[in-house]
Length: 272
Image (cartoon, rainbow, N blue to C red):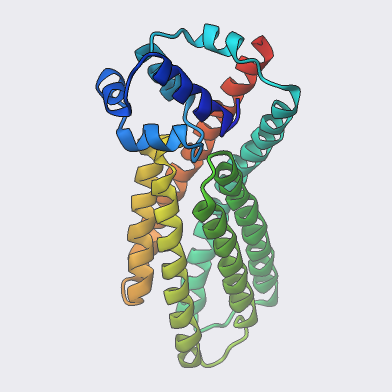
């Protein structure tokens, strides 16, 4: 069942039981803010949260689903979203691997005074293109989650992150033959500040996703905030690269949890 219909029916059931939102909080231990957002149709809660609320309202989940049948037009979307999330999970792993390799190559480029063989440049360019494509697919998973849980900031933040990674990839390739590294400080300092600012936005969006994806999303958001703050300072950018690794790993887990959620939703729909 999609929002806002789910929220309306849960609110109707609560009122039928003569319970206020505060009384439902006491019975379910779900925060009042989460209940308010669910009933308003602002978020699509996890299956576990729905079951907790229904149990507190004295309603069995299977009975609730049977009493509230799901139309066929609402069952086709989760399957496509599920495939997008699965692709995003693998893309995230590819992105992380290529990003680590590229960072190592950047260090080697600096220590060898920019003197690379031509074939190494081709490898670097190939890896950069792969990284950009993988990152775009990775972020597409969060755009999907933003749509499912009606998190507009997450969709905007993900699109902006794709744009800045593309811009930095182009910058990296265009500076491969640079002879004066001193001239690169300004563009890369600017890029660091921009990455940091957009990463902060993305981190806030992930924290807002916790109503649907739980504490794991909050952890990912906090890690992104640390990463963004490090990049904004410029001088602490290396901390950003270090924290980025666990951040991406946790984000992959968030996508997997979203994949599981949509899988369970599809199973529940098939039963009906």
